[in-house]
Length: 179
Image (cartoon, rainbow, N blue to C red; front, side, top):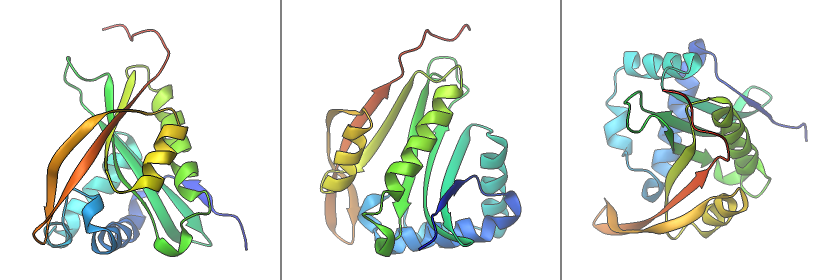
């Protein structure tokens, strides 16, 4: 089997990003704050703008795992331009297609995402929330240096079922950026 690569998706491939995101929302609804129905309703311009914003790193970035041109997974982060919290990035949208799990793809995506975030001078801390039942994901994040900071009880409700979210954070050891 040929090796996958970790890439930033060029804006013209926005429809592939849309398809992977919708697939993620359908297959793992308890893992995301957004719903399939919510994002299915987005106009194509919304998806194009998302892809363009990530490509330009205009407050966010997304990395994708690709094998022979097919997207296998993704991991993204966003950050604010606001003075008080521009030093914090929020991880979002981490997903690997079920048939590809257990092959190191999620770890490779997160390592690339964290390496790129560490290169941004203003980012000192990375936060995330993960379904508290996603033990493999929690173990991966811990292996990457994230520490648990608590549980948000009944944070998501999907089809009448509630999900708790584990909050985790990672601090980069670098001096604060100059304001």
